[in-house]
Image 1: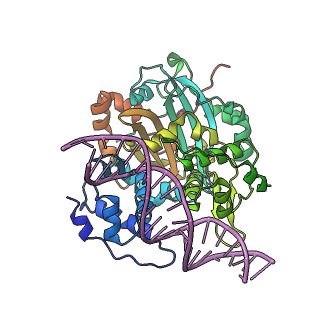
Image 2 (image 1 turned 30 degrees about the vertical axis):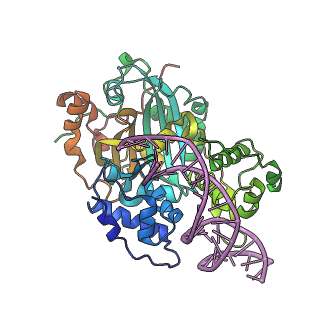
Image 3 (image 1 turned 120 degrees about the vertical axis):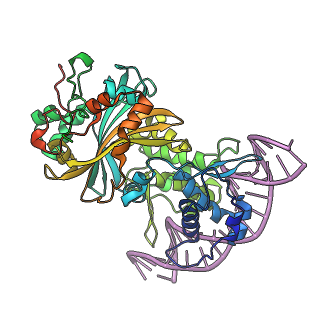
Length: 219
Length: 219
DNA sequence: CAGTGGTCTAGACCACTGG
DNA sequence: CAGTGGTCTAGACCACTGG
């Protein structure tokens, strides 16, 4: 039940630097993480909730927009629509934790990602399995460095199903690979080739370790 | 100069399914990608721009919010503040193209990412170079499958500087690795070990291909 | 001081959708 | 039909910041 949510509506302070919509967003987030509002629950209607909080509907919506954007709420219009609390996601903690994604999001004034490599290759078995594709199906492989304000925050390698995303690699990004590596990381082309060429397009030519997720660790 | 931007303000149609704020966002995006507004340029003030478009300031702001959230605009308050066109990012096209990230964002009602592996390891040379860390510095390695509505959309391997993100891997995610692999992808534990154990924490034990970005391709 | 973006109000009409 | 979220209006006051 979320009707009692209205009774728990907090007093909102009107101070500088801590806008009302942010206070509402935080309050709702607390209600959800504390379990007082469960996944699948429907929030009270916007008009009702706004009245309980003594704010205008537009201000409430600013808070709900924030939560919906982060995937915490799912909103649907229509007679029996509303704002529903989303199912918690497995990586929820990872996403929010340590403020990494959050930082990126807030600071994305200077956040960016540089593409080091982008090719279409045949899926190796583990990649194919993870994407539920047949082995050898075409996949786009993209290597990127994610950064914020000039500081490298993560190196990312991704594989995406090529048939579902036909136009993804229209840009000749591969041409820039060596330039980028040389200019930015001071790696000679030889080293670059050594470490950043894509795996063979022919699975039979790939070593069992070609995907880099292989190798036993002594337990 | 962006004063002429006001003269190019489009006629906005009031139809269903294509809200005014989305039309404004598209128009501004077109102006920027076409180069008629350059990186670093300041847009006209919100009040002035809203008047030229014959919309309320709040509606205009809905459009600007969208562009700022995507990092296209940078806004600062104060006397000589304003909305400035951000420097183009290298992966700008990749982000927007093919609607992948956009799809994820809109559909994130059911979007998720499942963690297949998460460990802290010593950075191999290419990872260290990309993150501008010394070789062997501790990095978090995370392997995830990103999906939307149950369809796997990407397999991702990321490395993040561990010292900057101390609490990232507090959860015992590794415990679930084999379960996950077995349940979801029908891989026997043996196969899982074969393909998804992390690389050795000791660089000297790693093969030259341990990072999976190695291997020449016959050109 | 003047102009900026940030916030907030109290309304309105819309398309949609289940009863 | 009634209630939902989505959109839009025409105002208002705020903190901030350079001249």
